[in-house]
Length: 449
Image (cartoon, rainbow, N blue to C red; front, side, top):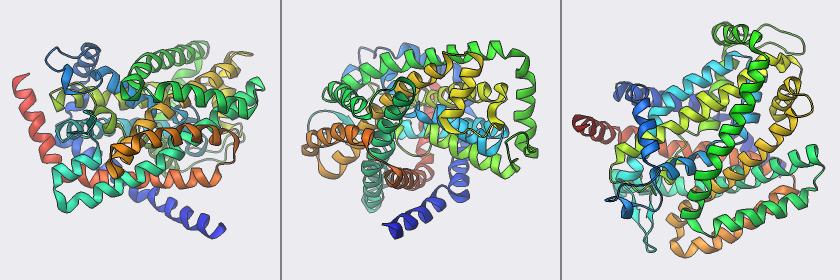
């Protein structure tokens, strides 16, 4: 077992190493330039389409299973998770305040990546035997690049099916169980049973029920967390100018040692900022387009404009609030890391309440991640084994929630984290090869809008 762990650790070091991060950023930058910065310039248009996409146009209701807004919320239910609370804290702890600047850069190029993923997902989606619209990297690889590339789509589906049980299921239920045990003395097994029942209630209703729940729960939890964060920032308002100055200067100069902080080089700020940014918003990993493929829309570009908002909201809004709360508190040099650091920063400004806000937010974020990732992994399993695999998959997924809450997951986390990064490779290859299709469809759309 130790040999296997060491082997996977070595692969993990490669797939989350400099080469992968440069590849993800490089593809995003290539797409952003190819789109002539359209995702940034048309951000307002994206928000207008999102708002009008709460219900599909009458001519498009049969084109998918869920309204465009719900497709975005389903994708965001998977991305808005522990990365927004624990991941940002880890980035700042290891890379210093400058890491937040590099997270922002990741998001700006990631918007183009997410746009392209959704455009291709809708363009090349299929209708399965149950009449559901299915899509994502495995389908745009097969249908866009042709049969000789189908093996690459299969590879993505294998990685996605297995990775989901770790990154999007057991690791999430484990996080919820431990945070509720720490803050509310709730037994791990009880949290596991409650989570399992709630997951089953939503999951057995399929993509439509998941979209409905995500469309209600994601905006509520995100806005509540943001409001709590803004209250903390108002209380720490005097520290905001210095925090912003630190973020921008430390991004290029590194961070000197302060208090319990060992200091970080510029490379550490870039590495951890980019890695945690990608982990949080998943731009380039190929997961979100699976949800967007179910959207009730005829136009791939319109869904792409809505999809790119996921990266903007996840990283430039929610992660920024977390990062600023941590930096303005001054506790990033305290030696704490992960969710404990975020909890301490909130509790510092809101004694007796702050840690509970973070605990509840973490629990809700993790629960919605379980729902969002169930869609991703189920679609990957369906691609590999057909519609007959859907019901058995859902049963296994529901049971895995309980298992994850009560067992140690060091190896599962390592394996899932590695496979999660490996999902990016087939997807990034497809995005580069199919980029002319994205550019062409975008040009055609804006010539008439």
